[in-house]
Length: 550
Image 1 (cartoon, rainbow, N blue to C red):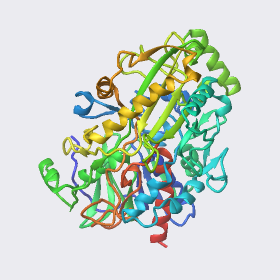
Image 2 (image 1 turned 30 degrees about the horizontal axis):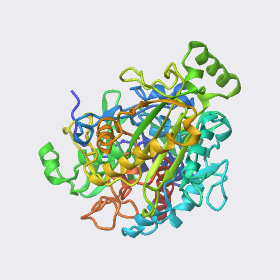
Image 3 (image 1 turned 90 degrees about the horizontal axis):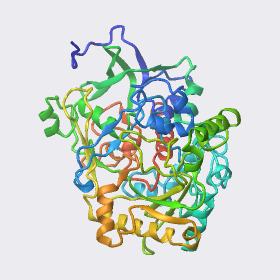
Image 4 (image 1 turned 135 degrees about the vertical axis):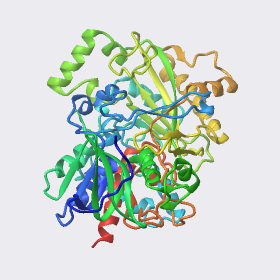
């Protein structure tokens, strides 16, 4: 029987200067940057294993890893009243690279105002001007203005516009008909507009945080990576973090940190680990039978996530459905990838995109747009068959909200560290979010009715032309909306210990030698995908840590 909670002192236990918990998007950055000088020993503890798996490395393989336990935590939320009582499925990476190894590879930084608003909340050093150098340091961008884009960073960001399906040009033309200007780079001077998504791939292969940061560093003698090891709690000496306990191969072990323990377990598991360690809402911890080390009512609170809705259309022209549905089509696509690194296997299905304002009085885009030249209306439950689309020509267009107002929470289900946490995003608990989604659905109809699309669309498959009133569209949103996998804000950053979990240097309020460095520290959501911002947080966090230990 495994007993959680017994602490043995250092003795012959392993120790490092810095312990990084989680080899995800931020953790891989920390592993590389903290070990780069050779002056500090770094230990990384990761619950998953190596990312050297075929379906992790092949871009379209994220359809396979979407429900693959070997690399995916496969979380679920509690039933959501805002989704008509439905449960939302939350894939999260359990592998080197974390969710950057199983995501759709879209590279978006967010809007400049997002970061200026972070700084305005009392977080000096986090304005757009402050974080831009870290975005640039992290990337090698194939396209873009050098004032905004990096040219020699570890994360390769590809321009795949020449490889995209021809219908993506129709998508851009439809947006331009509605007055949405073409934008060649959503990560440059201006985010607003319609265009093509850039993706984190190189020469047809996925570039995860593990490939960009961890693999180049893993042979350093001062870096140790412990895989298949699930951390069960942080160890404290009074208010000072001194190490962690983890379970590996059925055995509980402890490892110690001479300088800092750094949680990079993500927006779900960083707050879970804090609470398992006695850091969090006192009443909840007491209810769980956990001794309180530091009361903080905000641990696990303020959870935010983007929600998306798709509209599906049959059409007169070939789409990826025609290329991939038949056995021969799959074989041909596979051969093109293996021998030429070409074809749909080297791409995300999220090809076209955009950022727009739902009304002229908005001070920044509040809707993100998507175009995929493919459709799935007959997918079996518990599958995401990116290589097995519908047997007819069709495509999807969709949107998600940018700056959501609804806030949920992460709680413990029990004191058992191996039990999944309770995830309750409280979708649509703020009425403004459903109003914004309604504007998004109306915009989809406007796009589909442009001259660019009107001549090729034969039928609206979903939600269907009978959904023609505001009431019907709102009903559809409540029954169909789905997460776009951008959980954040559960250990939010702020100067006041009574209102936040970490300070602007990412140190946990009230404790010593403990930081959180991942998407959970966002004071509120960024406008867009969260992988690029999380890597930026890892870059800036590593500088903050090294500055504090010079």
